[in-house]
Amino acid sequence: VLLVGEAGSGKSRLLEEFVAADDGRVIVDARPGDSTLPLALAARVTRVIAARFPTVTEATAWSRLTAVLPGFGKSAPPATAQRPQRLGTEIGSVLKAAAVAGFSGLVVDDLQYSDPSSIEVLTEVAESAGLESIRWLFASRPPEGAEAVRSLSAVRDTWHAEERQVQGVRVRSTTLPG
Image 1 (cartoon, rainbow, N blue to C red):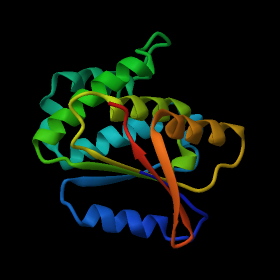
Image 2: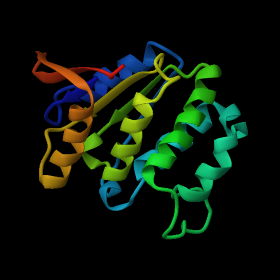
Image 3: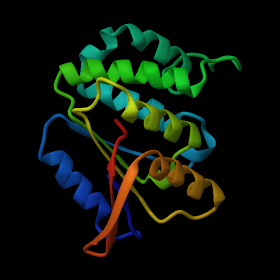
Image 4: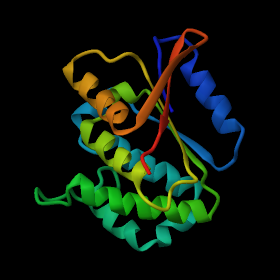
């Protein structure tokens, strides 16, 4: 699901209630400035999942991820680091390990702040086989500026979407292909 609404329209409260209804759901916020740091949101998602489901650090993909994602205390990845498509496979492996430990949903708030690489990676992960039981919920303010429009369009265009209004918030229900 992709929620789009103005600031103060209740998106974050709705997300918090969704997460509170199931211990296996986690919420991650994109932050101002993320759009200038490639893979900032993807790295934050990975850290939050690992903090909530520590057994994921035993997954084979974990060491590869921490070597290339920002903020894991490693030196900056080389210019030839894995492309986001490869990272999607690795993050998908970590989320599958988390699902075994009870992970059931990823909620991303303030998607308007995200970097395009993270949007690309998370979209790939959401479509990957083996994660069909995971619920995905994204929220954003209406896009401002060309980059924000492109980022949200990537999410909307990838998934079949049905749009409707719920208490003044535009709700786009999405069904992943397949």
